[in-house]
Amino acid sequence: MLIVTYIMGHTLTITQETLPMVHAHLRSCYKPANVAPHTSPRLANRQLKFFFHVIRNQIYEDILKWQQATLHTSGGKDTTWLSTFVVMLAFAMVLEEAQRTIQIQADAKYRKRERSYDEAQQEASNACERIDARFQLLVGLFQCKYRDKKWNHGGSFGPQTPRLKNQTEHNFCVQLRDLLEERRKLAPNCDLQLTSSAANVRHQKTTYARGRTCRSLHRPNASIRHA
Image 1 (cartoon, rainbow, N blue to C red):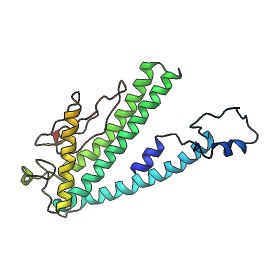
Image 2: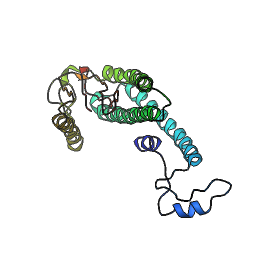
Image 3: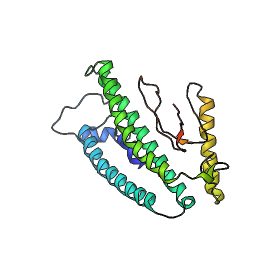
Image 4: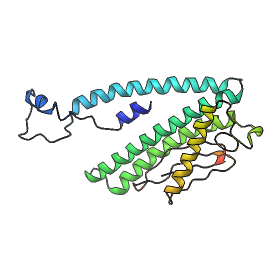
């Protein structure tokens, strides 16, 4: 899911090693005297992106169906928390990448004078807010499923998360938590709050005027924000 989303957000170009050969075989089209590096075939790009778009939608559907089935199970919360948490984390990363691409597209529209700066940024902001609103539904379902008073202290990912018995799983969550703490220290302008409640995932302004970052998950009423 992450790999396909990354591909969708980047332009595919012809490698420098094969570019002369491809240029030499072009027919029925204008052939510039000098071929610039990072040349991208527009038609091939659109065809490949459509193919990856279909794959991405199928992956989303499969994962969401699995997540729904897992959230509806009556099994022990300790046994399913990590898998559903990782899925939510992956979706947060995917949506952050998608929102980053939206902001880049807004900047491109402004630079090509297709939109004014305010129009481009407002259009991107509206798109990001629609993504936020839909993801908030998943966050709410996750929080409702995994509220548990016995997880007040000593959780692998902090307060109000379970302490995982598997040492590898426990270490993963601890290291992820440490990474968030480290990010907060390295980015003084970021607001990273890890409280005893679960994370209310929000987006923070980044390098673009209204750039957004991905949501994070912890437990209700806490927020994890990073640039």
